Image (cartoon, rainbow, N blue to C red; front, side, top):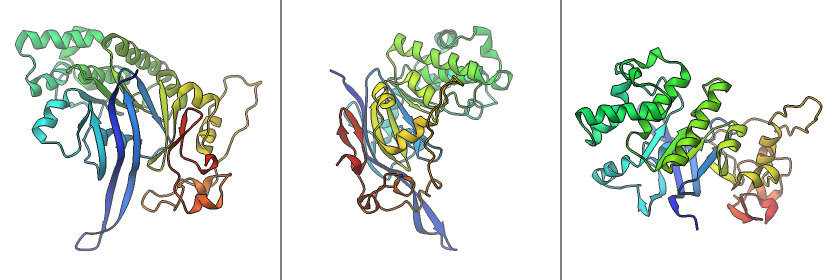
Length: 321
């Protein structure tokens, strides 16, 4: 039986919109609006959706880099939300992140060796020769050489910089790694190298990933289960095979129809969504997808659908009531 590592319950993150001389809050941007899901030990949970749907905010809120507005994040049964800073600091080494931009996330003033050793210094885990050996070990793990430790981040390619970011995330032997669009800024050939590296590391040291991306083919390759987000909510959550073979939600069907087929002789029906993504500062009532949905019903405009199980998949849609 699978053991849960992280349980997210009714997670919300609202950003205030302030106006006027006094800076009064007049509204909120509902970046994350009530998420419920579980990440099991040793698995990769993919999180996909259009830009601005709240994927990155979800990852940062789970790690408490952003304080949630409401909800719980249980790590091995311990609620990270509102936890004492000293207790949270002790758990930080188990929760790491690989950021989207491998250049912006690396301090240009530090050498690669100093960047990778920084987490070790903060948590006081190793010193002197032991620390140098650990940095060398991490560089070898991600396919770099020990002499790279004396160079600076700007001297490396995008793929190499992302490997450095992965090495830094692994320095503390974490249990959960949140990968926020780790390959979106890389060439296709480099993307495959980084993804294969992440998979190899998962097998070697039993890592658990929350893999955030907008490229469905990449998510399909690396994930065990996939959650589809739209405007701050998960609309479908399923095993990757089930999701691709039998999508339930109209939004998931539209996303999958956009995946190109590498065969010019095969024709595929493309589902074109009407309109633009609504603003998270003023989301539609009821189901937030209803203004763009070709199967919209009257109830969709007034009542928000709950995420419930349908044929082994979880879907938030009134079509299955």
